[in-house]
Each structure stands twice: as C-alpha cells, then as structure tokens.
Image 1: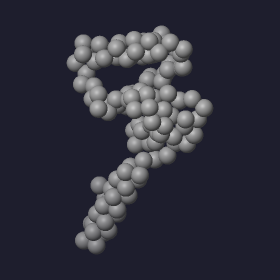
Image 2 (image 1 turned 90 degrees about the horizontal axis):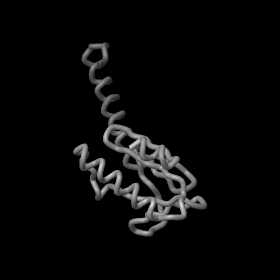
Image 3 (image 1 turned 120 degrees about the vertical axis):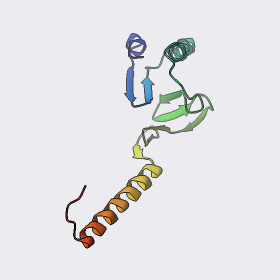
Length: 121
C-alpha cells in the first residue's frame, strides 16, 4: 500500500485493521480507479478482508468533504474522529464509550477502597 501511495505522492496511514490513503487531486479520474483496483488486487492476493460497506472514496476541495460514492457533502470518519473539511472532532460515540469506561473504573476503584484493599490494578 505504501508503495502505491508513494508512487502517487500521497500519504498512507494504518492503525490495526483500519487504513487510509490520501492522494492529491488529479485531473484524470481514471488514475483513482486504477489505484482503487490496485488496492483491491492487493487485498485479494494477500487475503486481506476489505469490508466494502465500510470503504469510501472522498474528495476534499475548498474545505468540503464529498463522498464520491454517494455524492453527498458531509464528513469523513476515521478512528473515532470526524473531519468535516474544516474541523476534526471526536465522534460522539467515542466520547460516550470513554465516559462509560472511566465511570466503570472509578466505581471499581471506590469499591476496592471501601473493602479496604488500597491497591489498584
């Protein structure tokens, strides 16, 4: 993947099983289709399970994100964050999950202290 992106002067980032390819705007849309086919080919050859329902292609231009699959102007989600073309925000679902885990840990710590065991995991 990195080699494909480097050949097209883009950026490749990966975290666990999520990845993103960022490529500069080209006048020829066929170049993007070629890159998309290259990624699909690599996925098939290396037995990478690409979830096509979660896969999107976006155009970022003049502070707008356009989903090229649906042609809607909106936002891009990646790793629990939203990018709307101007701002990056934490997804509300991510905030909720963080809050829920923090509350559970605080409750656990309070219960341990009440029992008399001051050592925390």
